Amino acid sequence: MATGRGQALASFRMGLEKVQQTNIRIPPNRRSGSHEKKEMQSDTTKTKRRGTSRKLVRKPESKGATVRLSNPVRRSQNYFERMPPEIILKILSYLDAASLFCIGFVNKQFYELANNNAMWYRMFTNEYEKMEKWKLKQADEVVEGVNAVSIQEKPEGYWKRLYFRKMSGYNEKKWKRQLKAINPYTGLPRLTEQVLRDLHVTWDITLTDKRGRESIFKQTHAYFSDSSVTVCWSKGGWPPFHQLSTLQVHGVKRVALDCPTVNKPGWRSLIAKHDVPDIQERVIGSDKLVNLLRLAPGLMIGLWRGNFAVAFVMMNLHFHKLVERSLLGSSLCPYTVPEDRPPFDDVDSEYGLHGYTVHILLHNTVEHIMSGHFSQLFCKTDEIWDGFIQLKAIKRNDLSQHTPLSGKISLPWRTDGLNGNVQNCCMMTLTVLDEAQNPFCCVSTPITMTLSKKESLSYDYQGERFFMWHQDSEVKVKIELVWLAEQEQFFLTNLVIYIATAKVNKHFGRRY
Image (tube, rainbow, N blue to C red):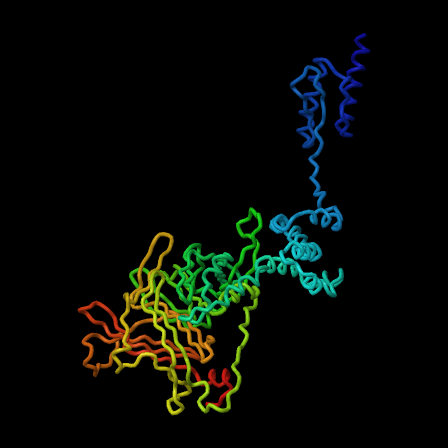
């Protein structure tokens, strides 16, 4: 009996060694006694000493626990990558526009699938059918000559961008009809502010550094006047000013989709683009905290004094074609304003030199400082000087034309935690209308007031003389002011607008 028991134990031990070598699971009906357990523990210890990675594991929760050998961990497989692209596109075709847009942020593969031209073309045509006042003629114009091959030949994301553009401006006829009502005082559409607010148009600024990294900032607030809007960006982590390469301003119209992402889909229309290294920046004002730089017409940037880090950015946008420029351009190309030339007049020898109307507004981000409307301005042929015609809106020797200013020349600013006020600086919005009351020259720019060094020969006012000056390639503006200390008020005593004769000749077909 003892010999038989010894042979059985030896045989059992040999079986365990074979199990360890072949990685075979031990059936639960082959259990051993206490002596066998000691043998197993001894063998396991020897196996560990030999450096073998396999070990025996016993489940403690039951008496008849199964002795098993753990299998190596297998790497999980991505079965989604093994699916054919046709099946994946079929699944994605059941998503709506909002879900399809959001899924493009998952990874690179989903981004490529979510920009499939065939799916977005289907959504584009379906959206046309849902629009009110649907016309079959419009549908024919869209799908004419379009087949499966030409759809895919379009650049990646073409129909997606077209879909969002149509969604953002599908009521184009409605707001164009609203813009036909003209304000007789400014000569601009009366409902520009209302249309921009109803369409929820905002403006984003994109800063690109010299390494090509882009930073997009949403507007923090906007101030509307009767002929322009001042947009401010004062939140976010700004890149260093000396590392900036380009600066772009886009009009943005978000699509009304139930999209949980922060950056909802929409249409971006380029309004202005400037290469920062090529800009001849000029300090136009400062206070205790910031230096205010003028980068381009209408564009200013505030830099913290001491470290020259960006504090905020401001831009004054003229109302002339602002809705079209904010909606009808693309992300890379701005909207082109069509030229409206008047018919040539060969009877009037001074055609194009008379019948002008000027509307000028001085304001800041809080209030109006001065507003003036001057009609029937003209320039004689012998008054053309240095390639510019002169339109004298306020003459120095005519006291009846002198205009008081309702406030001081200053430009308030604010950021998340700080605010300030730059003295002797404000915004100027100028609109020059031709004889047919069409906008001829439109300027929106920051302007600075400077103390005049010339001695005054006028005895009408006793006070310090100041002047404001703006110049670009087409328009120059000269403003003279006097400060009356007793009244604590500025008086505008001289206002002259100079328009380049090249612009006049091109518009009216003349050769002055």
